[in-house]
Image (tube, rainbow, N blue to C red; front, side, top):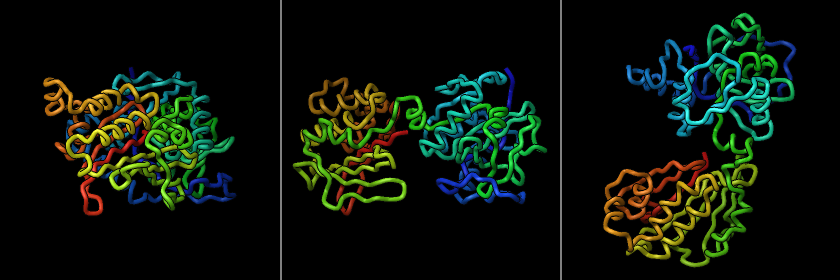
Length: 374
């Protein structure tokens, strides 16, 4: 296997949601300024790789990073383990550390990423490119039928400009970054990282639950869940919804963030800590039902142990109760947070993350369960 190092891995430069990709008649070469957020994350990467152990895991800023190291860096900085899409026929490199790797012909991979940019409003897709001599990382921002707009973290002219690469591709400057034809990108694309939610939409295994499906679910009907008066707020990137159950409304709150397609991008159940005292069966019932009802099919196997433990609190055998109190497994940590033993806990599901927190809310103690798709 070859060792190919990719320089410049990092987060995407922000730009308009739907830039016009029509190329101006005249362009002037310039360095695209970094945003504050990009600068902060790049500084974090430098700190991560400041030790020998860090460079082994995440790469060397002076030399670059392997594909496994760039995948690990993306996961650490974003909190998400991305799906890695490989361009078939490229030099073989180690991928054993990457959880999910799927190969596509280069042209098909470019078309797939363009579809994600155009139809799913995906932005900032990290792509490793290789011209046969050196590797580099860019971020895809937008696409049309023929071209792709990308951000290049390299200062000055992009490394995909004709005089900067050995593959003969020719990126040209655009108001919001650099433009390259799909055909040219297909010549140099090596790999891409996709958020699991984007890959789920592309592969027919969505990781976000449509709000309309939830409204027709057993959870909504059993607990008589309904939107509060004036509880819907529309924002640029989606909608916030506040809901209440039919009973115990002063002790239970439910908030949802919906994306532009009406799917749940964040769901939070709030339970007043005082109401949860003495293992209140109504509290455990709604908590376990929330977990079972708001995750996708892919995550149900991983969330099932947490649901079972919550449902059986108060009648656990001694061995299980001891594991709840002392075992580091994520299902026991979530239950400890529910009991108030720990302040917070985190669990990684198949297509969502689960966070359990004890928080102060408007001067009162509350317990919060939050589900967020990857």
